[in-house]
Length: 297
Image 1 (cartoon, rainbow, N blue to C red):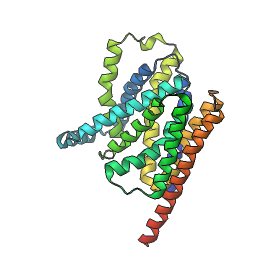
Image 2 (tube, rainbow, N blue to C red; image 1 turned 90 degrees about the horizontal axis):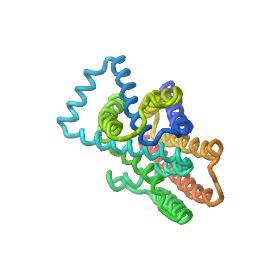
Image 3 (cartoon, one colour; image 1 turned 60 degrees about the vertical axis):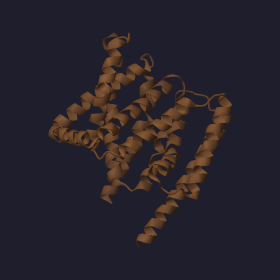
Image 4 (cartoon, helix red, strand yellow; image 1 turned 90 degrees about the vertical axis):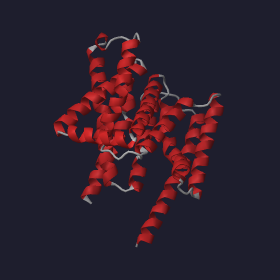
């Protein structure tokens, strides 16, 4: 029970922090999205270097990297790093361009995308409730496409990038601190190269608050992920599935009530279809979980 309580506290904390990140990025509207992404990787690496040094884990870290290199699994780390960079960059761009509502929709869709990926990549059986849930989500995306007159590419990029990031992470057995450190190491040269060759303003051309926020972006990147890792180890899949919707729900509320983005009846209809899909998916997951427990007994 104590372990479960720790899992719920850390899990809810991680999803709340992820949910309010939109407010954080909105304070950096004057900074281009690619610049924020670059600084996020640079200062995440600095923060994780401090963490590993404090924990005296560098020897273990390099041993893990050597094992990944020898097994050829380092390619999964490189690909996962690129997908999380795509997810972060797109989300930051959307928040800065009045699309926070659409970004939250991407995170609502993502768990249902996981169902599709599980079928095609891991050959997991597709239940009737999963089919129905994905169908409702697809209807929602089609309606959004019809309403806007174009495919919601940014929304789908957010969903697909994080989904495939999760798939690739399953191929690598690494502690969260090692994984995040390695991902930031992979992206660090890209960030440095971007700043070297682009004509973007230097970090010190901004005011003190903006500089502080950019530096702290490393901390606010790492902390939720580390909390989530504790939760994932302490909670069953069903409980974790429930609380994951805290993130997009907070994002949606912030988009509507803080950013004052329009949430007209047309958008509401889109979200209703997505929510119905989520409800069906959740009910199906509860049923499957109870059956699994029953057969174990």
